[in-house]
Length: 87
View: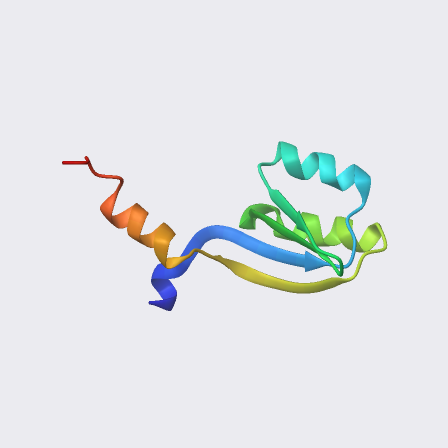
């Protein structure tokens, strides 16, 4: 089940802050950003993970976590079954 929920080429990076100049580039790269009171969560392509982490460090942010992306059971269901036609 764990393997089925992995989203493949996606990673989640959790950091303390997000430099403004990096935020604009993340959007252009197709990454999503979620902010909370304590940190910032970035979901991006695994191909860009090193670049993003280095840019966070250079911008003065601490990287708290770097995890492979995970999908939900609902995402997996929709991927396997599809939307289907209502009868």
